[in-house]
Length: 66
Image (tube, rainbow, N blue to C red; front, side, top):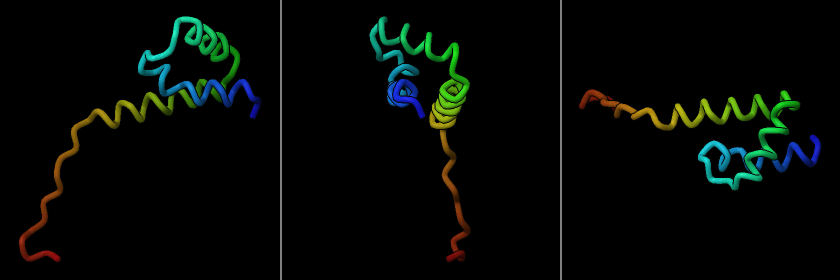
């Protein structure tokens, strides 16, 4: 993995949450235009964000189950 990809991947969680500077966002956007691997990582992270925002239903067990 290229150093540039490593840096971008470290920043992607902050990028998704819009917690990077304008300059950093531009840098990431430019990188993503040409890097399929980082685009895939961004997509995976976004899916994870969507999954984590879904409210989980508690699991109920019958009283006699152990």
